Length: 118
Figure 1 (cartoon, rainbow, N blue to C red):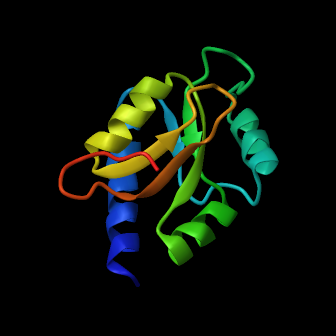
Figure 2: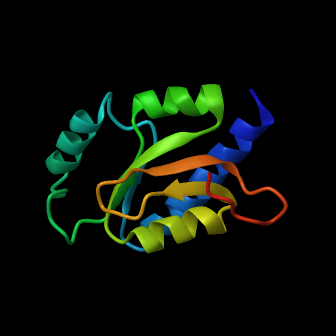
């Protein structure tokens, strides 16, 4: 397995652990597709349509992309500043378009201690 993939996975684990400690549902390799994952969250009692819901996940397709490319798209709800802050604190390079409709892209690791959105 590529070193970058290993490092991104470790960063995601750290970020997801920190987000769980703040009340987020954070899941890796969760559901076959976003619709399936949202349905699974609903089964757990989480209303993803609510502005109060706090979650972050990537799907099985994202898991495959992570293994291939060292990058992954995160579906999320809650406070993007909190989520992106934890991702960056975990050493991950992210790109986010700035709206609730935009996925958060994890694009590898931060090189040289600087976050660079690409």
